[in-house]
Amino acid sequence: MQRRVVVTGLGVVSPIGIGVSEFWKAALEGRSGITALRPLADFPLDAYRCQVAGQVRDFHPTDFLDAAIAERVDRYAQFAMVASTEALRDAAVAMEREDPHRVGVIVGAGMGGMIMGEREITRLYLSQRPERVHPNFIPTITLNSASGLLAIQHGAKGPNLTISTACSSGAHAIGQALSTIRAGKAEVMLAVGADASLTPLVFAGFCTLRALSTKFNKTPGLASRPFDRLRDGFVMGEGAGALILESLSHAKKRRARIYAEVAGYGATSESFHVVIPRSDGADMATTMALALDDARLSPAHVDYINAHATSTLIGDTAEVRGIRRLLKGRADRVVVNATKSLIGHTLGAAGAIGAVASVLALESGQFHPTINYEHPDPECALPGISSKVQERRAKVALLNAFGFGSNNAALVFRRWP
Image (cartoon, rainbow, N blue to C red; front, top):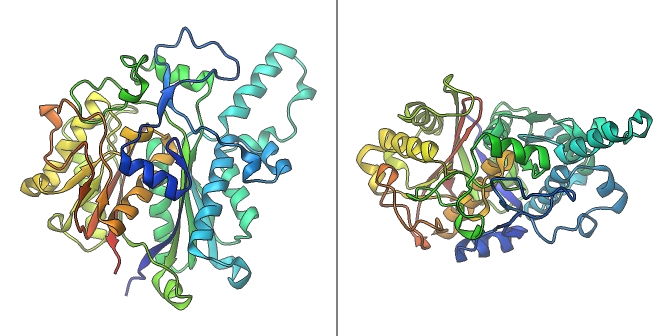
């Protein structure tokens, strides 16, 4: 019989709050975390087409981490460390009582240590002093830096992996953590998604890709508007989400609080285009169907979807087409919301933060609003999308995460008990 896996701890660092309680309160209030972009390392922003972002404000690493450690790690890894510490504390996992080889870490990251990377390469070219490159440059910018740091920080000696599938990284990290526990290779897995890529080069790259919103530079809070007819691109964000996954038997043995069950995981590649999804949503529908099949559920069981919904013209429309293709008539009866309307697109962290929102929604019966949904686009309208909090006793949630490179992931969560 397949091992059941549950969520016992949550942690968040986000543009609308540091910590789960602050994040969830702001989410239910429909508070936007999108603001005017701060100067990027004293780099002038006048020439940037987009000048808004979902920035984590009032984040002081030394409030959470030892000063010597905080100085040596990139911002994305700081976020991961803070969110994971909260999640472990929330789950009441006492590492001294655990077999460390049965506790693992999987981190999803889209870009990795870009802040230090850009800073050091700029200094090198300006100074032409290779001996002055930061001694921690290599271990800090590698994509697996956060997963290694988390394992060291918490003494986890089980599987230690990094998933990098762009915007679906965080969701894949949770899915792979689920698979690891099911396979009997761990009892407890720390699954994290983290990114902090608001840097001059990365931001410029997304601007020249013409993927970002540009029409709301003077009204930042209105810029991220999934499913709305006036949407004109996504808004970059930063942050981290962390979930503690455990085998059900292990969680029961230590009498842990259980938020929800992680019931299914689906992963596909559209094999279509590096950036643009297929407009018919067919492969998105397949991904969701695979996740439901893995959970031994059918489309008729779905009550709620936390949509990928980046606020791009093509992406939102394709996702709704995929939802309708999968759910058919039931698509008009499910709750659908977009966490990115509140915090922007946090890249590798998006799936993990969306998972936190999904689990909290199932537990509380409250579904945060999709803000700025003022002019429903007929091409991607669903009755379950609302600019207000919705309340319903939902049993099954789907989380979607679709990434550059044609990478698709879907997760199924089931309310507990």
